[in-house]
Length: 85
Image (cartoon, rainbow, N blue to C red):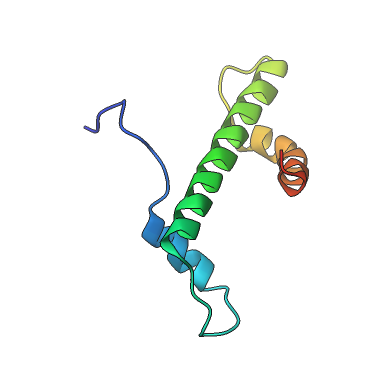
């Protein structure tokens, strides 16, 4: 079993492949630092989604977070991410 204190995040290689797959020109490259930065941004985004979903569930007196809670916070989360949190 993995150590609970281990850092959880996105692999740089995975993020790089995902981003590169959306490039329109084959010449476009992604630096390692840019991939690491994007991985960190994705981690923060997912953590924020988890916290907001949990708060939504608590506001509805639920002891478990369900997809419905995530769906309720998603529009606000996407708007916030466009504005830079």
